Image (tube, rainbow, N blue to C red; front, side, top):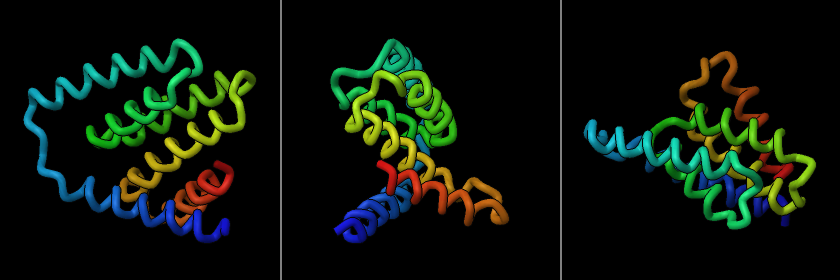
Length: 129
């Protein structure tokens, strides 16, 4: 059963990676709006553990859409460490899933000699989630 879940998540991540590469380039006005939305959502998510997981996933989606996966991984990893004592196991799994998805999107930007380890760490995150 775990194998099926991991394979399903990997398939979804693969589809999202392909979709992110196929999207047309955004215009400058759209890029500015994305940065403002990301800054706003970062402030909201930095206040404390989100009561509604949608806030976390909206922020994750904004990072993915703006091709700022590395920034998202850094921000969400910092929040995970900051909030760790107060997180339930379900909330921790949500953070780990969001971080793993953004890491998967960022994998092509990792140097080839580091990529295998990076992908293995990402899969481990999914397993932990």
